Each structure stands twice: as structure tokens, then as C-alpha cells.
Image 1 (cartoon, rainbow, N blue to C red):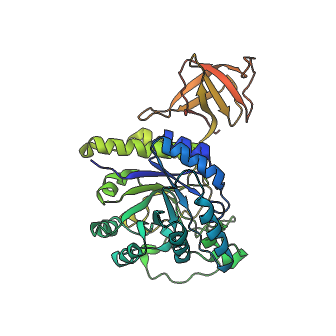
Image 2 (cartoon, rainbow, N blue to C red):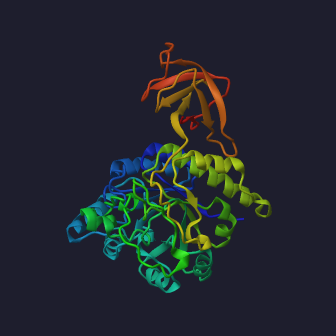
Image 3 (cartoon, rainbow, N blue to C red):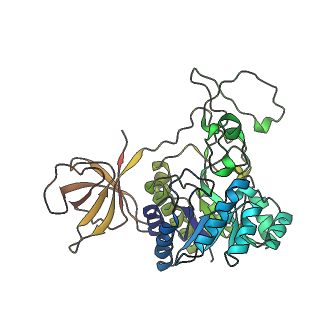
Length: 409
């Protein structure tokens, strides 16, 4: 059985490598500020070349987000970036684009570059797909606002490959077509400068009669206000069989601003789920450990979004994404005797009980105790300091890519 590509976000080389280690088939990353995450840790062109080399050596793909909606003053930057990309040693596997002017420029300067149409463009129907196919698009990222039946219908026409979001943050507007930030503080979401005003708390000052019952919800205002526009986070692990059967080509995880822990954890779960479905589609079930891992990363309350026709997607009492765990260290390498070298993110001691998120497929998280911590010269340390490489010993054999995490009290 053929399963869709699993596509992960990456804001850095280390996150991209963690995504590949955890089972991602491809990664998407931003180029400078010319994408809809302009304030993310995007890639400079020299870093992008290194990322491409790493990915292609492992048989993986890199898609570059080039999906800003530029004004006239930005067009020269678009052309300059396209010209610079021609000099890269390794080829980008596809651009993610949305603006027709960017598409025309890419076609002129990089005529062989595969183009994927961003969800920002809002392609809801087969007529739109035919239009974009005639203009050189090879894949469409479908809007989050489509349900499974609509997705099955457009895929049944077999016009273009399609990609959908399966996990991560959602936008209260139609696929990012929001002007609220530009209106309130001059930060334009469609040029990568979204200030996320939907996550702010608001006070209710008027109450108009609601005529559409299915779109109403209760929101009891407190002294702290209420988050009227704040959406829940998407999680589709339980819908995976229906999603695969809908005919999509790629399953996309949102989160270019997310941590290495988040990306590795979410990719690991969906990789194992896809492998399980491919092995035996008739016996697919969501394992408790998958839910546990997804609950361990920072997230808002989960929803299946519009895929099953759910329309009350707001979380009105808080907008903060919370997590019960935090990453303590990542295993960077193993010495000749198998002793692991750890890249410490947050300090810890031998007295701390830590959790291992194993990088291997179907390996479940487990708790361990560190027996000894030393520096790279072998000097015993009382604790592992942050932002340092240390050597640790424990009864469990740690492998490169494994993550150590700790429960947040």
C-alpha cells in the first residue's frame, strides 16, 4: 500500500535532522523573510545548501517556503533571491508559492523548479486546480477549511497532487487571509508579519443575536477577559485511515516556530501511525502511547478541525500552548564504547528522573536515571550545565537522536 509523504517543519538544521531521524520523508523551511513566517529562524542561502546536502544524502526532500504576498517594493528581492538560488550546489525539491507575481518570476528565472501552491491561495475546487495546473503548479496545499468529503472529491478528479495539514496550530481566518494584525498594529500577516491578534484576550461589550446555532458557543467572561478568536490545535491521528484513503499525496505538520522536541515527537507519532496503517489497514487503532507523546508537547486543546465538519473550534479560556514536559538534552553522538555525548538544553543532575523519547520507530518513552555526568575530558560534574556537551552513563543504552526530557512540576 502506498501511503502519503510525511512532511515536517524545520526552523534549523538540528530540527530538520531530528525530523528525518524520526521518520519524515520531507521538510519545509523558510528562505529569509520571503515567506509567511518572516520572524521564524529561517534559512540563509548558505545554510539552505547544507540542509539540501543533508537531506539528499538520506534520500529526503526539501521544500522552500517562498509564499509571501509581496508589494511592489519587494519584487526586486524576489528576483534577487531566485538568481542566488541558481548558484546553489544542490537543487531545492520545490518552492511553496502563493502570489502570481512570484510564480511568474520563478518560472522566468528557475523554469525547472517544481512549484507547490500554498494553502494561503485558497484552492477549494477542481476549476481552481485546473487554472493553477495551466500555470505550472504541480501540487496544491488544500485549505484547512475543507472536510474529508470535499477532499475526496477534488482528489478524485486527479488534476494535481494535493497536500493537507494534519497537525498543529490553526488560523481563525480562511487559511491565513487575515487583515486584523494589519488593521490593529500595522503588521501584515500576508507578508509574514502576523502578530497573532487572534491569541489575545478580548472583552465582550455587545451581544448580537446569533442566527446560526451550529456556529455559536458559550463564553463566560471573567475578569481576565475571554479569547474569542483563539482556535484549538489540529490533531488528526484518529482520522488517519480516512485521510490516506482520500487520495492526498502529502501530510503536513504545522510548526516552523516549534522546538526540536515538538517536531521530533509529532513526526515520530505520525510515522508510526502511517507504518501501522500500511502494515495492516484493517487493524489500525490509535495506541495510548501515541496520545501520550502528542499530549507531552506544547499544544492547545486538540480538535479534528473541519475534516469531520466540526465548527466550534475556539478555545475561549486560554490561548497559551502548554506542555507537561520540557527537553533536557539531545544525544548528539556515541563514543567508541557506546557512551553517549549529550547536548544539554536545560541543566539536570544525577538525582533527576528523566524520560527518554527514543528516536527509533515503535520505541516507547521510558524513564531512566543518569548514573554519572562528566565533561568531554572525563572530569566528574555535579550537574550537567545548559548549552554544554557532556558525557553521561546510565543503565539504558542511549542512541544518537534520542531526547531526554523532564516532567514540568
